[in-house]
Structures are given as C-alpha cells and as structure tokens.
Amino acid sequence: MIELIHASKRYPNGVNALNDINLKIDQGEFVYIIGPTGSGKSTLIKLLDGEEIPSSGTVNVVGINVGKLRHSKVPLYRRNIGVVFQDYRLLPRKTVFENIAYALEVIGMRKDMIRLRVRQVMNLVGLDDKGNSFPSELSGGQQQRVAIARAIANKPKVLIADEPTGNLDPAMSDEIMALLQKINREEQTTIVMVTHDLPLVNKHKKRTIVLEEGHIVADLQQGGYVQHD
Amino acid sequence: MISRFFRPIKEGFYGVGRHAAMSISSASAVTITLLIISIFLIFSFNLQQFTKDVEQSVQIAVMIDYAYEEQSQMDKIGIDIGNIEGVNEVKFSSKEDEFQYYLDGFEDEAQKEVFEPFREDNPMHNAYYVSVEDGSNLKVVADQIAQIEGVDSIDYGGESAVVLVNALNSIRTGGGILAGALSLLAIFLIQNTIKLTIFARSDEIAIMRNVGAKNGFIRSPFLIEGIIIGILGSIIPIMLSVFGYIYLYRIMDGVIISKMFVMIPPHPFVLKIGGILLLIGMAVGLVGSFFSVNKYLRWKR
Image (cartoon, rainbow over all chains, first blue to last red):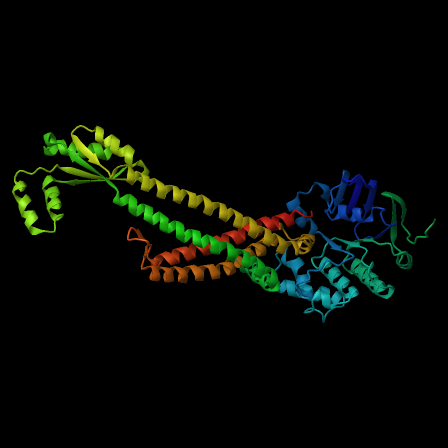
C-alpha cells in the first residue's frame, strides 16, 4: 500500500531531512510516526502526499510512484489519499457542508450523491448539525473533525494525518483518536498518523515508527513507546 | 454536465461577492485605465477620420496634352495611370466638363458671358483626377504620372499637401504607439492588483490542490471573477465616454477649430467605443487573473 525504498530528502538549503528510509505499510494498518521536532516527520508526510519530491529513492503509494508525478497530475493522485493537517486547512469562505462537498465536486460526483455522502461523513464525525456553519464559528476539535470528514469523503485508501491532535486538549484528542480508529475499522482505511503526543501513543497502542534525525530508529509492531534519554 | 459549465460562473460571482473589497480595488484599477484608454480611443479614431478626409480631398489633377485627344489615346493614359501602384481611383473629366467647371467658378453672369465664345475653341485640357491610397505616397505617384506619354502637366497641391498629410500621419502613428504603451502599462497595473487580491487567497488555492482539484478546476472560477471585475470596472468609463462624447459633439457643433476637422457623428460611434472598452476590460481582467492564478498554482506542488 505504502512503500518507501531508499528514500532520502535533502532540501536546497543543505538540510538532510530524511536519510535512506525503507518502510512498508500494509492495507488496513494504523501506524504512528513519532519523533522530536526536526526528525523528518513532516518531510515524510510531504513525500507521501506529493508536496515534495524525494532527492533519491522511490515513494510508492497505492501503486503510484509519487516522486515522478508531474505538477498537473499531483491533484489526481491526491484523490486516492486523504490528508488531515494540524492547522485543519479548511476553506474559510465555505461552510462546513461546502468544504466537505468541495472534495467531491472536484472528482465530478453528481450533486445528489454529494449531498448523501456529505451527510454520511458528517454523521460519522458527529457534526450533523453544523453544516451551515463557517469554520471560524467552530472549535478546534470541531474544525479538525470537519477536516477529517473532508479527507475521508471520497473513500480514500490511505488517510494521512499530520499531528491531528497537535492543537487540541487531551479530551478532544481522545475523541479524534476514537474517530480515526472508527474510520480505520469501518472503512478499512490505512491510516498514517504523525504525532509527538506520547501519552496518546501509549494510550492507544498501534504500530509505532520512531524517526530521529532523518533515520528510522525503531519500528515497534506491538506499539507503545518509552522515551529514553 | 450542465453544472460543470455553470459551476465556475456561479463560483466566480460568489468570489466577487465574498471578496468585495478586493474586487472593488481591482475594478477601480480597471476603471482608471479604461478612462485613459477611452480618451485615446476617441482622439485617435477622430484623428484617423480627419486624416482620411484630408487624404480623400487631396487628389492629383492630370492634364492631357492636346496632341492626345483621340479616345483610344486617352483611354490608354487612363489605364496607365490605373496601373501605377498606390493609385486608388481614376476619374475622367472631359475638356467640356472642365470648361463648364471653370465658368461655374464665376459668380457674375456678365463675366461668364465674356468666356462663352471660347466654348467652341475650348482651351481646356481633357483631364484625369487621381486619388491615392496613402496620402504620403502623393509625390511618388504624381512623379510617375508625369512620366506617362501624353501627359501635359500635373497638379497636386504641391509640397503643402504632402506636408499636411505626413503631419497627420505621424501624429496618428505617435498616438497609436502611445495608446499601445499605455495599454501594456494598464495590463501590468491590473495584473499586479489582481495578483495582490489572489495572493490573499494563495492558501485557498493550495488547499484546493490538497483535496485533489485539478488546475483547470481551480482556475476557471478565478478567470470568471477576472472577467466580472473587468466588466464592473468598465461601466463608469463606458458611461462617461458615451455621454461625454455626445455632449462634446453637441457643444462643439460637430467640428474642431474649423470645418476642415469634422468630428465623427456620435451614433453609432459611441456604441463602438463602448463595445471596445467593454472588450478591453474583460480581456484585461481575464489575462490579469490568468497570469496571477498560474503564479499561485505553482506556489506549492
């Protein structure tokens, strides 16, 4: 499903963000990627969603060589994956309903089907009554749930979440985690979640990949992580 | 299918509405530019009209030698003149016509009587009146006509006619260059304004790409928005130039300085100007947003 083979990323300013990463994630897995600031977590996400091109090696997601995509083809690739960002990235001038519907409009889905699916995912994330609100009228947790609803609306095979609980308090974080696990279970979506929220990782144990200075230093299948200084 | 066609239009209108302040600032840049362009348009169309009038009134009078008064000889001269490059129209005037024209020049009946006996022994030449396509060619064409066998003499108002035509032509060329440069400057200005308005929305464009929108899908509402802004910006210049020109025409009595410079009548001229301004406004809005959106589409992968 997701496979990185000898993937490295070196930015033009000389920073080696990722070094020779080999990683395989199977269909239906739920994987945490953790590590301190500057360990290359964000770069890994950017390689996966096509925002950055690996300096060497290959990145394969759902059978597509992401690093070789042309600029104009990147959006087409992104229809196979859903991405949730720490800062939500909702369109500020569209309502909740419109934000979620937009991801379906772009793939040319019929109006009535869009309405049906948007209601479905709004129900799934527990925001049935917020359809006409604008993002600025919602709490952080609610906005993140809208972003998750948008990301899963077109039933992607992979959901990538970049610190989805980064701006939320622990109670909210648990809610989001419960939601992600529900999506993983009910829609068979592969989930890759980048986080530095260690209590969360230890509470909801999943396969955990630890990054440090651009290297994978641990890949714990049984999950849980004790920080060693 | 229908919704695919109407979506960008609908979104374009929403975009203008939801970014009202930005839209107004872009539209006013269009307005100012179009005002200047409209003045240039009206000026240069009128100048073009003056020049055409003058050029049409300037013609070469060709007098045919008395020894070439056979019809076949005169026809040959006419054909030879017509074959010269740059000749627009050749009109024949017989010596009888010329005599009558000469007599008509006198207001006093008595004086006409004096010349009446000459009608039998007509001293006039058969003549051709030649108009040229381009007034600045006047002298060249006239010189060539003078070479034709059987031409007694030519008269084209001499150097002064050439100077006038050349002067008008160079004013027209200069005006054209100035208007062209001004339009380029305008597009640059408007493009910058639109770029600023879209810059505020570069995040929006990045998000659209994030959720899988193709470039064309993102671009089309912005293009419609640009066209709408162009139309909004052209309303005031169109109104001003239509009613302004009609008013100007009325108070100037249709002429500038003297009867020699006749203004173009307002109808349908003002409609033409209005249409051109509308088209320029739409085109500038479209081109401006096209370049600006493209820039921000490339901002992130």
